[in-house]
Amino acid sequence: MPETLPLAPQLSYAIPTFDTDALLVEIGLMLEWYLPDRGAEPTEKVRTEFITMWRDLLSKPAASGKTWVLRDFHSPNLIWLGERSDIARVGIIDFQDAVLGPPAYDLVSLLQDARVDVPEQLELALLTRYIKARRASDDSFDPAEFAELYAVMSAQRNTRLLGTFARLNRRDGKPQYLRHQPRIWTYLTRSLAHPVLSHAREWYLANVPPPVA
Image 1 (spheres, rainbow, N blue to C red):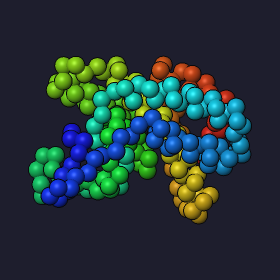
Image 2: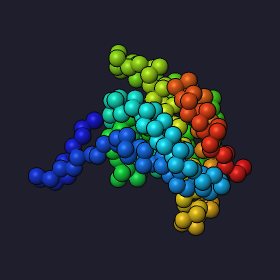
Image 3: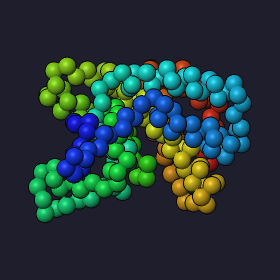
Image 4: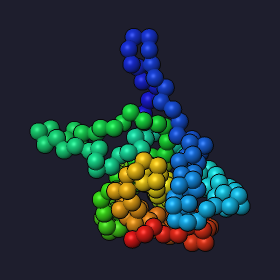
């Protein structure tokens, strides 16, 4: 996908990169909002461990190929346009924050929808379908490597969402978002089961309390 888009004659827009620092800012919402909301004020040691652990985990996505990432590629932003045909039937809104980042990110957004329960069996079936399509179009595509990136991006995104929804409740007076936290926790638990996240799984078990059911 192009990294620069023409907007008007002699005017173009360079899509920003969704780099490690940007991803770390996102997951920092867990330290600032989710943990205090659950009565677990993080110490300086906990903060340092968290950032160090995540900077290491995000080194793989940072080194992987980049594509357009809409960041909110999920059901509320997808519109069915039945009068069209094929893929054009899927309309997309809320793409103004598009960045260049890991291909796995938007796939996680879709297959682990924050607002709709996606059964694990359905998630795995759709993930398999995606991997088969990528393999068919790209001989260099590595399914095992992509599965690792998918797990890391899942853990990153769901960590961020726990913090985001806690902030929406505490700062913005929107408690309705808290009902999504148990679903987010389920997705996070799924991703932490991947071997590449074994250290992170132990850290979360020791330091992150689950949301109120």
